[in-house]
Length: 166
Image 1 (cartoon, helix red, strand yellow):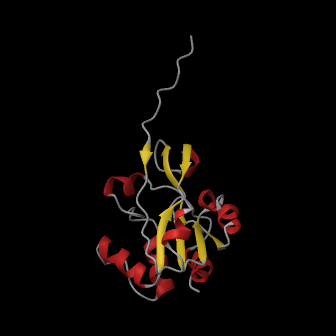
Image 2: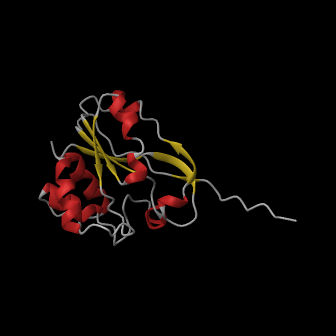
């Protein structure tokens, strides 16, 4: 007799990093295991998110503590969130995400009236681009900053990430 797989416990994502002044929002898919453990967006030391943004913004965010990184990001009028609020997943790979529940993007119109552009960090996040484009936002699909996405060099990724800034 075949046994049912043991269900995975649901994982909850993070609160968004938003302000009424942001003009750009970067959406990832869902925090990886290291990020969940540290309760920080892009906490894995090999993830290129903070180094890429440092180069885009011409400000070294990497040595800053996490709260200061978020403050500096908001000072550049850039917000941060994920497309998924809750899911099941074993490990950190996006391909293993199951039972994904999307975040409530309608709140962006209320809480971020100056928001113009939504950028998607990777293909899983990018699957939500049409939904946000339909809400009137400019959208930009970015190559993933994940260490698992190694088919492009840092410099190749950076050339596309530079389009984040308005």
